[in-house]
Image 1: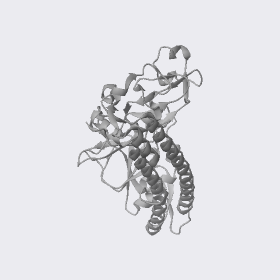
Image 2: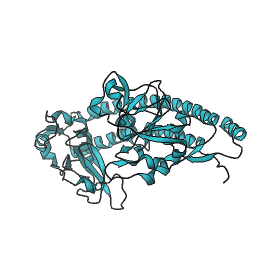
Image 3: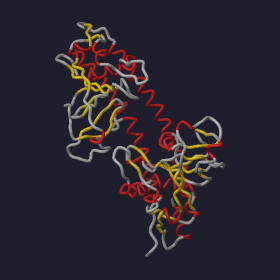
Image 4: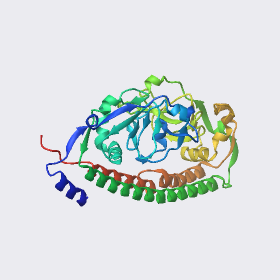
Length: 393
C-alpha cells in the first residue's frame, strides 16, 4: 500500500475529506421491470434480485435483457453508475451494489436504485462492500421480514473522497486481490468438492455394509415422525436479537428466529416443502419447526448420529409429490424401509461419519476454515485501503 500512501502524501497532504453520498451523487429509483419481462436478447436489463445472486463488484455485461420498447419507458443506468439492491431478507445483503461499466445503458427494476456520481465507479462499489459502509447503513434499515433502505437514507452515508488518482490506485489493488481471491477460492472449492464426494462414497459404503444382526425396518418403527407447527410470520425475526431466541426452520431451511421453541434439541429435521424439500438437518439445541418441516425423533435403540447420516443418504426429495408445490407426506416417509444394524454398529458408523462431515462442512476445521480465512484477509485489506485520516475541520 506504499504507492497509495505516496499518492495521498503528494495529492492530499492534509488528509482525506469525508462527504455524504448525496454530496457527490444522486439516487434514482428503478421502475417497472418485472422478472417476467426478462428475456435472452434485447436491451440489457438487471433485476434487483440478480444483484444478490449473479453480480459482483462490477459488471460490463448483463445476464438478462428486455424488450427495447419496454426499456424506453424504464429508468436506465449509464456507464459508471452503481446499481443497488435496496431490499433483502437480511441486513447484510441490503444495499448490495454493482458498478455498471458496460458501454450501453441498462434497464433497472424497482427495489433498486441507480446511483449517479462523480467518483470512480469501482471505488464506490468497493466502498459499498466495506465495513465502513455496512456500519453506517444499519441504522437506516427498516422493515421486519423484508428489510429495506431508501435513497434518502443512503444519501446521508459518509464516504471518504480521495483524489481520483488515489481512487484508481485503490481499485487496481483491490481488483488484484479480488482476482487472486477468486483463483484461490476456485482451487479450494475444487478440493472441497473432492472431499464431499469422498465423504459421500464412504457414507454410502458404511451405511450399506452387511452388518451381522442387521434387520429391515420401516422408518415409523425407528422414529417418531411428525410435521412441525404453524407460526405467524410476524413472530419471526431475521436475527437472534433476544436472549431467549431459538432458530425457526421451515421447508427451505432456516427462516429466522423466534422466542417460542416447540422442540428440544438433538433431533433430525427434514424439509417437507419448498426449495429444500427432503433436506436433512440435525438440530442440537432448542428450535421451532414450522408445518413445512418434519421433526424426526429417534426411538429406543436408534443412535441420533447414525440416523442423521442415514436420512441424508436417502435422497428423500425423490419421494415428494409430483405437483406444482412438491411436498413430503409424513405417511410416505413412515413406510420407507431401511436396513438397521445393531446399536453398537450404529454408534461406530455415526462417529466415523461425523468426523468426515466435520472435515468437509465444519467452518472451524479443514478447508472451509481456509476459505473463511482467505475471505477475512481480503476484507481486512479492503477496509484498510478504504480508511483514511480525515482533513482537519
